[in-house]
Length: 397
Image (cartoon, rainbow, N blue to C red; front, side):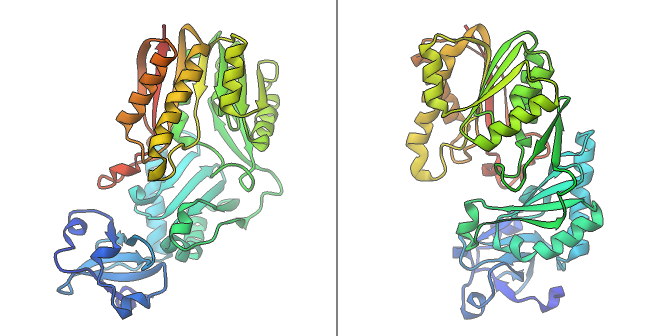
């Protein structure tokens, strides 16, 4: 459809200020939800106008979502394959400035001007998430644009995020284009190559957001014994082993992730240094404490403990407990890494819980580094809440 043939969606009087100020979202209570608006199919593109009929741009619309409209452009623009190809080229140019190898998050939703889309790149294989009704509506057009810009060998859809349910979408995991029969998707980081199962593994296959933190840990790992809890496919452990760690031990509850890590250790000739085991994190940490184990480096990169606002209290305390259990395993003078991927938990609360947990463990120390996601996970200036990741690297006394 051309821009002029799109349905018109009207913003209520005096509710257009945020959008005119650069915010990419319009909430449902800011929309004039008349019968015509309610008849628009979820995810459809619309012409967004103010109460006087002046254009605010092109948006995706879902009357059933709290975030009712997501802006694609503030001008009268048709969102078609050529439009998406231009956005992809801009995102690609940024990544190629920041990275020398084609392994990164290629598209990070609104910050790259592509609301609802997440795209991770593994060389010639792409993994896509369409997290909104608008992104789902544009999937065929996106696949066309991806073929134009990158000509990938394969495109995997990992549409299994909980946020899709809020948009009225069903989960779906499938191969959307190309083939993985000849070779699996591969990721390269820190001199290590790891084969990934994008159809069965966690999320989009790899946690690119912590690549910078992993590089710091690897730089501190030479000659050290390291414990990697919530190790997933072994990213921290294997890059540290490659950088000269004396030994690395990984723990994760996922049998598939442990299998990938074991295979990657063999493939990279690190089998004598790295070992991995399937176990629940907290009981494993308690057992290691009982054994009086100690390590020069302990990495704890847990899943999200705060998935909804009702989880804020107990979720925050989970980071305290994690600190209390992990800190005693760090040798005096050693290094502890801890991360939090809960966007609902403020960074200052995370830091406070970590500090309390250290005190409960009877340990002191200092923060050497702290940070968030890398430049392939940019943040839209009007969506600071999307800066979900925070982490600390501490030396403990």
